[in-house]
Length: 399
Ligand SMILES: [Zn+2]
Image 1 (cartoon, helix red, strand yellow):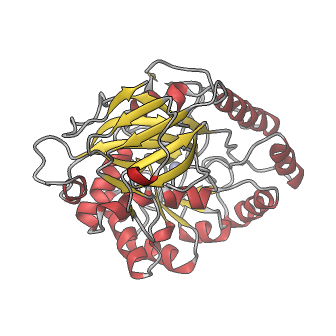
Image 2 (tube, rainbow, N blue to C red):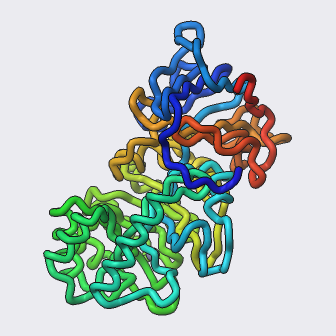
Image 3 (cartoon, rainbow, N blue to C red):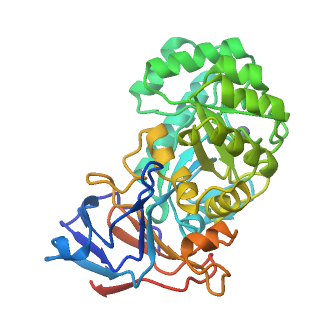
């Protein structure tokens, strides 16, 4: 659908989706719900369960899922936006809209690092972060929620800079390590200041991603103690296996696996987290746009890759990209719960998959077909232009 500057508001609306074949909750502890219908009012989930038990009267929009599955909208926990729906890294327009067609309804900035001429001085980097926070919260490309405004820390910042950023609405740090701060001691101090003022943090892990960034090894990651171990599978270049395992075992921070990273290292991380019984730490991102470009299906590809090669049930892999991220990042979406944002993806197995169900096809490594996306209770896209076509496709039956 077209780009849209609206953010919520408008007349009261009631969305009903019925005949859902499978409802994924996004929660590891109970990934599949006993439900075939969901109701949202004014963009918030108010009920879900068996259709016969729900009040579906007075709906402004009714969708017949025709047996499609429903999952919370996917969250790409690691993106590098710049301005609106443009990325200068590959000079591409419409990349956010393309990702929406891959089921992504929320994105989290790991820094606006591809901004041409990105300021490195302290007042400049603060101004850029505040500008990004303002512009992405005032304008949603195709409705996608982009949490942006993530300063890249530089030497010379003092506690008051973090207080000032927080007061101005900044809630994230860009990847620690992409700026001049690459030592554990300084990084740890600045991450602690950020945390004190409610700013979440992430760190670049592994070798340099693009000319100008550097190596961040396990000792720096542990000393920095950021909330998320950003691309623990490298972005692109991964740390040695023993360092990855050490990071999993030595702290309880988020373990982020990205599409632009090393797939073998992602599988090692997943296996280690499974052995530690800490799958709740695993979250997904693409790290796009970047040198590897934009992957509109990157999160779906990660889900299929981790489920098929990492041998986790598909419904668990979906939770990595939804509920896990929502919990670690304190988001109001990502889980099917009353009171959460009505951000959904309707999807089904792709046509001619060897898998007979959505979950089986993902487990076999196929990419699902997206039939519809919903953000804040508003239908944003119909059948995806990017995924393989799904067998079952939802339909608006009364709008
Ligand atoms: Zn990085």
